[in-house]
Amino acid sequence: MKKQLYVVLIVLLSGMNVAAAISLSDALIEVARKHGATISYSPSLIAGIEVAAVPVCHTVEADLRDLLTGTDFTYSKAAENCFFLQIDKHKVALRKKREAEEAERLARARIEAHCRREEARKCAIPGKLLMPDKSPLPQYAVEVDIVLPIVEDDLHNERQKRFQLKTNLLLLATSSANLAFEVAVSRHFSIELPVSANFWTVGGARLHHLALFPTLKYWLACEPFGSDYIGAYLGFANYDIGNISLLGKNFEEYYYDGKLFSAGIVYGHRFQLSTNFALEAEIGMGYVFTHYHRTPVTGDYILVVGNKNKFSLTRLSLNMCYTF
Image 1 (tube, helix red, strand yellow):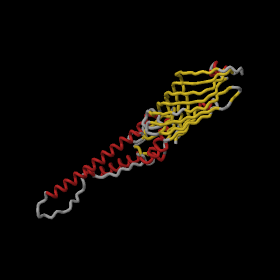
Image 2: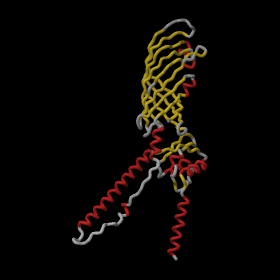
Image 3: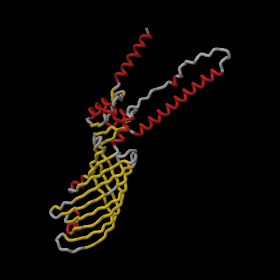
Image 4: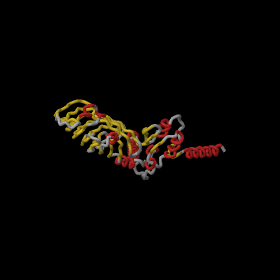
């Protein structure tokens, strides 16, 4: 009777554990609903992954940390109460290392078991018929099939994030057309090629220019297009600017026509908005050399030729980025 009750209890407990399991997708939806948050993720990436239960914590970030413990995922905060689920490459690397160590241990165990059986055959009594040893491998040497459903998705995700197109919203506000193309060349480095141009004259005001500022970036995280980066750039611009009071008295009273050469460093931070879109804020300092012709806005032709060298603020950007 006791044995029957014990078996029934085990079955009931097993049923409770199975019922408690919930898909990671449903758990994320429940966490988002509970905290009124937005959690973005790829359904195909987390398909088939289950968690024990939905955690109960005071904050959405604490719930996400508990929920993603033991998985290959982490989260980043894109905005207030808005989160983006992504693969944690450090977790993936640790998991693959553990799996490789386990596979090596199992292989050693199989070899040792085989050697013991061969040694037993060699030490058998002469004249006695030896039967094939069909004994199973030791429990610790049982083969295990390990399925890694996210490896292919992980590689596809890497391919998706190799390129970027972006435009500087601050330059657009001055009616200057601009576009930048960026390509990731390794896990830490990317190359950006931004071009901007303005050929319009409004009420005598000119912001004419054609500028090219190629930039090499080093991403501080172990992936391109992560959160923060530093970089170095070289720049060239051909310009004709003047009759603009916002740029100071000199640019209000004169037109400056010339060429500019620059080199410096930049720092930027990226705010992920969705899987493909992000905002990128950037500031840069550098050395500037320019050779120019200066003429008065009034029309009196008094030509002044000059050169100027200085260290100054050279880059200020708020980029809307599309990653693919």
